[in-house]
Amino acid sequence: MRKKEISEDLLRWYDENAREMPWRGISDPYGIWVSEIMLQQTRVDTVRDYYVRFMSRFPTLRSLAEAPEEDVLKMWEGLGYYSRARNLRAGAQQVMAEFDGSLPRKPEELRKIKGIGPYTSCSMASIAFGERVPAVDGNVIRVISRLYNMQGDPTEPNTRREIEVLAGDLVPADRPGDHNQAMMDLGATICVPGTPDCGACPLREMCEARKAGTAEQLPNLPQAKPPKEIPWDVVILLSGGSVLLRCREEKMLQGLWCFPMLEGHESPENLPGKLRRKFGLDPQSLTFRGEAKHVFTHQVWRMNLYLAEIPFPPPPVPGYRWVPPEEILSLPFPVAMKAALKLLERGTFD
Image 1 (tube, rainbow, N blue to C red):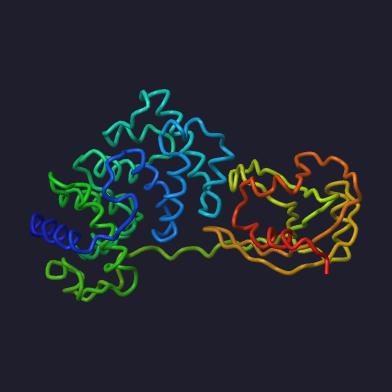
Image 2 (cartoon, rainbow, N blue to C red; image 1 turned 90 degrees about the horizontal axis):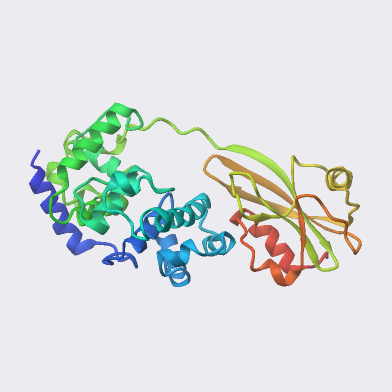
């Protein structure tokens, strides 16, 4: 296959069709790092505004390293996959301590930093430092699989390595960062999952899958397992205006604040007894206020929402905190608690 021609045609298309993004065209490695972490498993359109706000709040690597974790999570609120934010802050602290405050340029050095994996290290190295390395994400896997009509499963190590070698051979010595971004843009806008827009593709004349009529079936990925559904009773407990909250310590949503959650769906008649046994609280005026659903990658939370009052002053609850209303908005909450927060904002039991 004509490797030089592929890169030339791709870059020519990119120069005319590159998506406008606030992190494109910048030379700051830190800003590029933030964008790469935000873009992991998140749509570009979602990231744009978050990136601008985050960089305004933490404009330098040092400012991020010195920020309290709760502040960083608050700025990340709603973007999901919160371990990215915690790792980004921890990585910034590591760069300050181990790399004199400057990000290294080689992928193998970048991978030593917390939260930076193979794809991110290569993307950063090529875009920020001009290193000739391929950045292979899901978009690039799809483009390469179709371009070479590869029938193997890209989740298998041998096929994955073959894709990485083929992608690396296409990266030009000049403009490696633009080439990698062009591959990503091509996969995101034209060589999309399902039915690609082959008529608009700059590589259509060289695409083996288009010639073979197999483009729609590639890449040959295994069928994903359906997410596990988990029922929860989420209870907004109020006492004298304060709300009972918990800062999660579990790996999932760690560092984010949630209302009390009881696994399973209890009947409204039996829920007060369950709350008494679990928290030592005697709820009053407990009312069912609706349902909510939140879809994670591997889980689906199906939540029944309740409001309840506790006599004032409330007793202490181990692992929880009674938070006054003026502090609530400053705390980072996951999107899964959005419906419960709206109930709290209304603040009525009608």
